[in-house]
Image 1: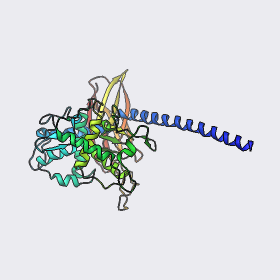
Image 2: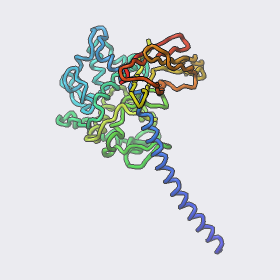
Image 3: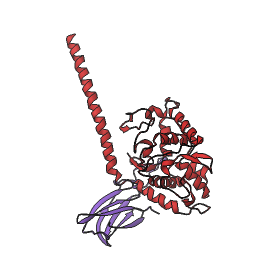
Image 4: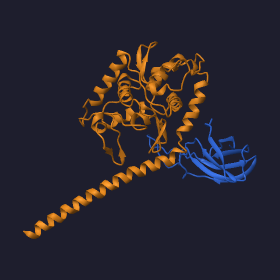
Length: 269
Length: 103
């Protein structure tokens, strides 16, 4: 009996030290990933998308032969700097709250493109490739600036509130919500630390780190694509590209991230 | 047509550090598409670096190089104002040359 007790005690000690060891391994893994990102940041291939987007911005395209210099991202026609950190916002011409991608779609429609057709195109094909480049260029122009989403209008506040509800909405075969993974600090999927989006995750984390170049797929992901993949992981039906649901989630995360520095386009594993 | 490279060249000590980011698919020829068909190999085969028109480095690349490759090297004796040009050729015969002035 005594022996068994001692064995149980020893096992308990082992379990405790085991926990300590794994906790240590976790922080060093996170540090390792941070180091990996820092090493790659110097040659972040997102720069290739930025360069392409910059060319596209001034190019006259579409059946109307217009460049993006007539495109208003909220800071006036053709103004790119500082626009990203104030999106999503309300636009008078479309009478909608729009995020960067949906606004770029509006501008492309003005150039003579079929916005609905582009929205239905799978990521990484056709005009979606150009959209990703534009997203990289526009977000890069606000690198190092603080998020400052306008919330002066009822529509903007409603959008952020709708996003909050979507964020906590549990559904699907896994009874999942965004908050299941992103609602408290210290959660992770395998090695990847997950940002706590229920409050401001801080400078260059979460909303402030997208769009980003993903080394694993060799592609630049916009916020729309990031959200699309979150929906896939939750086994939800895919949200429509630039749909109100995605803009609402963007508004919610953007409002939460107010004051955080944007490092987009960032680099991710 | 291929997308432009991003090249940065900065004087460091008695030479210049050159950093190049290339835009290329670098398809290995080992992957299959959704229909199960092999995606044909498509990768850079040769990279050439020149200082004021004189070749200073050549490299033979293959399928083991990553997509959108990044490369960094030092050119001895390069001074501010010198021209560094980088050229690549891929296995489809496509090529691209970009030039930058050492800063």
